Image (cartoon, rainbow, N blue to C red; front, top):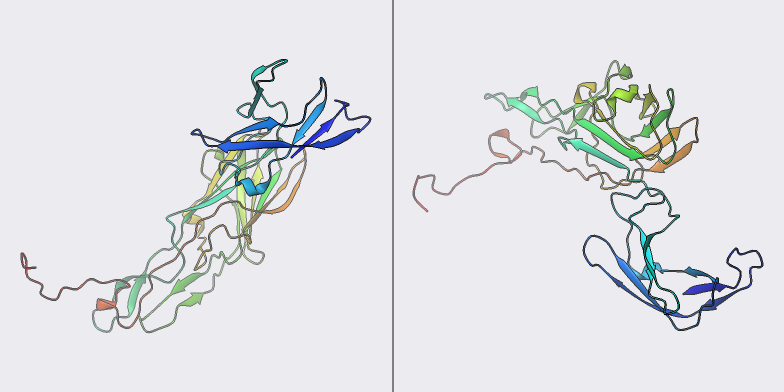
Length: 288
């Protein structure tokens, strides 16, 4: 649909609805939308075009910057064509991601079993690197903070002492961690991170200024001891971030992208007390 206004500055608000037809295509690396007007548009009339969600155009998963010059417009109007020109004003769409390396949930995985009874002698360290990436529309200054809310993340550990036993949580003793060093591409401008076990929040404090719309990425190292929940839900809306900045704040907002994580767990029927096993009917080399 189209809204056509006789006053280009929208002072008089003398507007009417017009009819158009549109064609959306994907020429490779984006979407192109072409409109054809069935109603005339006079000189200096303001035109607003609405592309309905039913067309199925999705915003880019990597986000887009404010006033992105790659977003363009052109017209082949008979009375005055205009070549491809950047759209002067477009909204900022951030890309906010949370990722894990390795993507491993806390299940009390056994590292070494007793040959005698299958009980677990040592457990796998299930800590993981957790990386958060964002682009903020406003500048960040020293002492500004980003707070991640990570429900069910914990510094407690898990153990499964026998394949027949349930997975049990071993509560952490020194659960909170203050002023630990962060890694990642933005580590140099960050003062450090702090984990609060009771609120399940991670607070990251900036130590230097960062210009607006710059990519900010940091990693909570596995040495901090944060264990992922089991299972982890893909793009879990309960995972949020908020920004407390001198230039402007952002209230708790869901993190756009986070992976799902499952796990193989041990059971009574697992061969040699392993969570996965492979057996052969006739274990003879070279024989089908």
